[in-house]
Image (cartoon, rainbow, N blue to C red):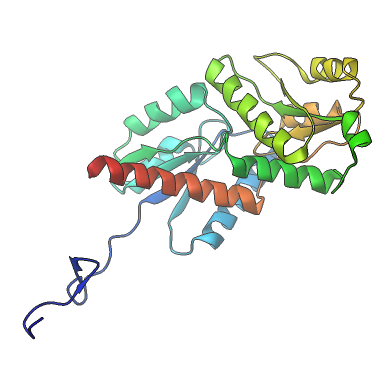
Length: 262
């Protein structure tokens, strides 16, 4: 290499002196919204954890309904800044397929929609951690496992893809716990938590926990937890694993964008 030849790294010329890398697209957390004031507090705490894990990444919040800022207002404030929308939703359904894309499509901001948070092994990890906090034993023998089970309580949707995603999450959690995990729903789908408990009891599963498959506290989460005959876990909220999952979905979306541009 002669003195006039620019040095190379990994086959690409180094950036000229003083040139800065372009800023990463903003991450917009898309929450559903709730009349329960704990929900907004929880989502803001999750946003703080995401920022703590990725300093320098612009992280914003927008709601589909009920709470401010609403997603259209958040996107309007971004102007033409590129952004990745990460739904704080745990399965596919109407909000992921219709509401969020419509709001994004009406905005000036250049956006990409990431996948919902579930199903994913990190979601199962967070559910397991919340159950452990509620009193799930760290180890059980074969006799105890034969009478133990979990009801995975989710919001529910008429969209069959949502139910498929929840069943997948239940299988991932079951693999971690070593006991059956039966999905149940607070609305719009069956079985209900009460029905799921009866089904498990008929199978000889009388020590049953309710795993709260909700991002934040609210009416559905409270009602499902109240039906637990044993322990009920808290909503997933601002758990560190949830923050990691949010960033995984953000990075995954950027990776897909890069692959499409190649």
